[in-house]
Image 1 (cartoon, rainbow, N blue to C red):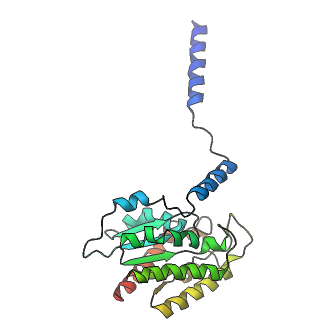
Image 2: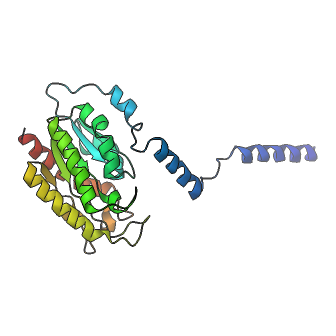
Image 3: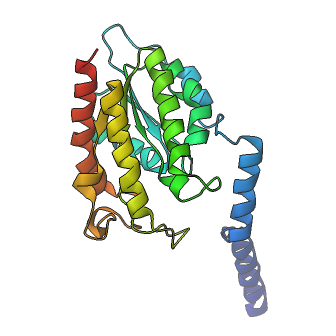
Length: 246
């Protein structure tokens, strides 16, 4: 009887062990998967295709706003219901993206949704070199191209400052802080010259090192909930200013 019980327990243990969750993929496996996504869908056109297809046209009195960007926008979207209750705000951020990728999907993920305003937050991943080396001029050209396309379709443009970064955890040593300041200066001037609205997150969020304080970011690049709550009223004010120009 004892032998039978021991055999049964051994069988249960073996079955339970085999049913355990597989170990997390290695860094090499994750890199391979990311590379495969870039090969097959470099601009991320598949990410929001179904959501866009199911989205109804805006109502006559609706002032739809598309928040367009990278992981910072992507992560923020889950807080929209609590931070922007009742607002017709749509998130169209994709983690890791650079401005050339965003330019490719701009028509699909912004123009086709017929928003009154687009809030563009982009450029930090370009500085980090996510899709290869990039100069500030290259980033500026892509931001200008997105703004021009929006204006051609009567969409008001809000260009956001790039958030402060002291160092990128995945690409250390690039000293991004002064590059971000220079890019934000260009964005400010561009908005003034073209009648777009400048949304200044940087001034409200920067610390003494030129990065994000630990209180509002765990990794020095991406805001936490407290960081997004700091950003939300700034975004609302910029959107209101853009709508007044209509």
